[in-house]
Image (cartoon, rainbow, N blue to C red; front, side):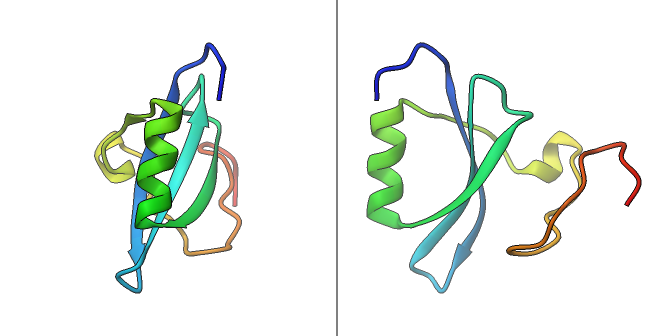
Length: 79
């Protein structure tokens, strides 16, 4: 994909030993989408995007994920 912004990837979990659940951000790692892909597709996606791997969210001071498919309010918002 041709874009000039830095792509960021943060692995959130491994599902069923076959899938990678991860957050993907483009340009700003504060705004991301969560995706899930088989390992091979994830590797190709990261290579194609030239993604920078970020450490675990907990290490960055973010709250742990609430669970798959559950809304998580932005940091600082009442919940």
